[in-house]
Amino acid sequence: MSVPLSVLDLAHVAEGATSGDALRRTIEIAKRADAAGYLRFWVAEHHNMPTVASTSPPVLIAAIAGQTEKIRVGSGGVMLPNHAPFVVAEQFAMLEALHPGRIDVGIGRAPGTDQMTARALRRDGGQEGVEQFPQHILELLAWFGDNRLPDPLANYLAVTPNGDTQPELWLLGSSEYAAQLAGLLGLPYCYAHHFGMLDPVKVMDEYRARFRPSPALEEPYGMVCTTVIAAETAEEADFLAGPARIMQIQARSGRRLPIVSPEEAATRTFDVRERSILAQNSGTRFLGEAGDVTERLKAFVVETGAHELMIASSTYDAEAKARTLELVAANWA
Image (cartoon, rainbow, N blue to C red; front, side, top):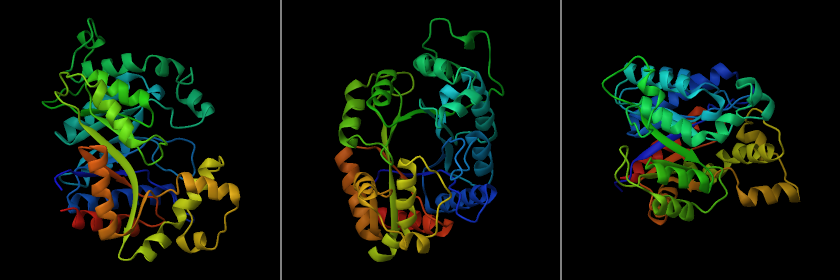
């Protein structure tokens, strides 16, 4: 299959480990993904969550890009309402200058946190950023050389350093709004199927239907991010997926705790409400023996018409996640 593979990582904090451990683990996984031939490695912005260490994507991107060779590195995503667009433009211009041709800036509209933290990040709680999201996207595009505004700030205020190449800008989301906006602006789009509840086929159809050619993109380019755990056997994969089930239940219950071990997860029992949560999303949408999982992923790509597939995994240790990536890559070709 010619469709490229990419990776999303949230720098999950394992029970008994530190945030520093989680960040170092993410860098090691990125190095394994680079060696396995993955196209992109993205990290997400989350705040005030004990289970996630990735609070500042630009800082983590710099660390990852500095220890990898070919893989593109980016944000999946930066939550734009939390930040002044000029700050984001400068951060990613710096990253692109340091690593030309390897930086992506994926942009999301959600705060990526609770409202109290949103107010701490931006005094208005990011509300202005949400309301002006399309305008702020166009401002970012102007600073990256894609000028569609009649009189953009980029005419008076330049981002530095100003390199020969520009980061690639993506829109991300789990709603039809993001798909529609990406299409109308003619930008590449990634649907967050790893937690989104919409039908990915319909979302990607909506993106393509709304697409208008732009200076950034002549034809639609869509990616779907989904959750995968692959192993040598289906039984092993199911065992490794236990922690993701616990995380899914905790997230829906408003509790975000460090990820437990598969041994600990195997001792848990679920009540009726928890089983209902797992029936909607078990935390791992594609699970099983590597060959079987890869064939189902290929069918998923054909069904959605995705141009690229991004894989996320919630596992207790780095080896299980890296092994999933390597097994899928080995079977993909």
